[in-house]
Length: 184
Image (cartoon, rainbow, N blue to C red; front, side):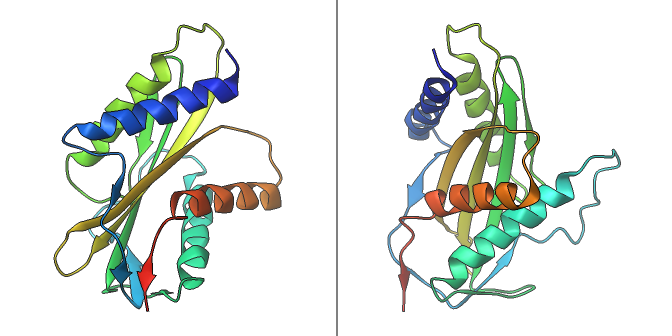
């Protein structure tokens, strides 16, 4: 089974798992908003271990900001009409880890990671792979209602140049938000 087939299987499993109490896909139709802000990390300390995840956060936030700006929704530091959270799940045939600093609190992060774990490890293929799944949530900042949730999975590519990495992240974000409808 090829890596492409494995990722398709993982995406399909996450979509099918959407029937459970923590859906993988949510779309409540057209959204009215002029501004957005990312989930606040004000009271949440940064991880104490050393890695390069800030680069990934910057790429993801820039891609989301660009996509929403193209729809007429402007990023503000806090208090936007919408709150955008995102969860990054990385895994292989045996294990997964979630990077959830910008997803917010609640049980959904663990449930989505469990779904990804099942999807990543459900293949009968013994070929090793590494993949990442990006989940984006868009919530109404006043009612806290989840308006949109989408996800996409890709193989992890370790040694991409910075411009290729940014282009790849933008493509993933654009895929996740392609059906997002903003009322003007």
